[in-house]
Every structure is written in C-alpha cells, then in structure tokens.
Image (cartoon, rainbow, N blue to C red; front, top):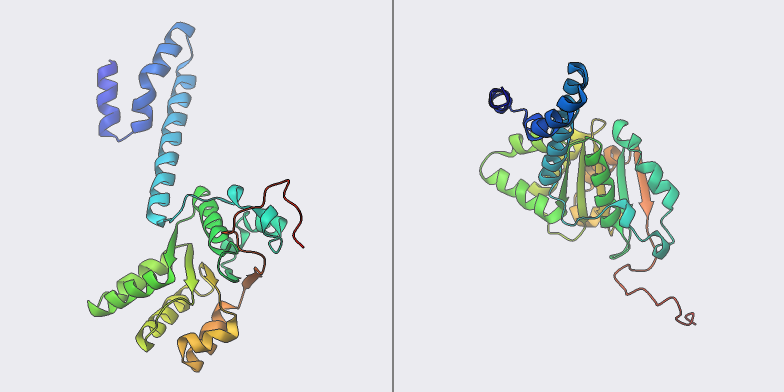
Length: 249
C-alpha cells in the first residue's frame, strides 16, 4: 500500500508529502492517530515543502549579488541611517502602496546593502523582485533594442513587484538608453515599487541623461509617492576601529 501511495504522490508532484510519508506513517501507526490528524500532518509537510521551493525560486530569480539581509546591516556604524525607519520599511507597506524608494549618498555608505536587505525581505514575504546593477540593466535594454525584443523585456521587468536599480550614475547613456529606461519607469509608475540607489542628487540627473524634458517627466513620476533617504555618514568599507582604540582627534 505504501508503494502505491508513493507512486501516486510522485505522479501528483506532492514531493513534500512523499518525502515525509514513511516517517509520518511510522509514527502514526503505533499511536493509533485518527486519519484526519495523519492527513493534516502530511498536508502541512507538503505546504512547507512548496513554500521553501517557492522562496528558493524567488531568490534565484532575483539575482541578489550578495547574501545580505537587514539583520546584518551595521546600523551602529552608519549614524545617518535611522534603524527604526528601515524596520518600518521592512514591513513592506510601501510595496503594497506602489511607492518608490530612492537612496542617495556617496560610495560605501550602505545604499546597496539596504536595497538588497529590503528586496530580500520582500522575497521572503512572497513578493517577486529583481536586482539590477544600473549598467547591466542598460546593457540588457540595449541588447533588446538590437533584436527588437524591447516590448517583451519591458513587460517582464514591469511585472516585478519590486525592482532594484543599483548605482544609477556610474554609466554611459545614449538617448536610446535614456528613453528605454524612461519607458520602464513609466510602465511601473503607480503600479509597482522601484528602488534606486545613486550617488547623484536629483538635480544632477540632468547631466546624466542630457535630456531636460525626459528628466522632468522621469522625476515627476519617480518622485510622486516616493520615499527618499540620504546617507551621508562614513564609508562602511573602512575597517571598524577596535573597541579600545583611542577616540579620533
């Protein structure tokens, strides 16, 4: 009978139940557990298995460059980051409201780490997301222009509930790149949340894109329903001072 059950579970793709079937049956038979209790345990194992596989798939698809979380962020070394504010953002209400988040600051201040941490938090809670270095995103958009697949790519990118564009500012833009990036943000406007990290203040975006009407339109959409965080503290890439080190003069 067990062999028949295993066969049926395999055909139904109930991998979680199949993995734990023998263990659950071995424990249930001597105890005389009722069938309903046995079924509930097996269904819980199947649900757990599917949840774990779904999370693993979302993490894989997100292309996170580092295994960082908000729990690992060194708030004690970055005084310009309000830990309580970040924890409030981690409740992910801004995603449900389709609000954007822009983190502005010099290199090394923790912008990317916070963006990755918030994206990971969203993935753990069932949202679909994607991380992009800004230059990589531009290159992918350029390749799509070349093979006429831009519409399909924009549709896929617009569907992510959370899209992180990291290091906007360190890249070379042609007018075609700028226009395609604008189309992406236009499709996500008021529908999905976009997180952008950049070393540029908003007024410096005009020099980057070299197209005032486009930047006016882009900022109008990006800053509507937008949370802006500015990080101005020390670089986190500098080694931390020992606890007993003399105070700097």
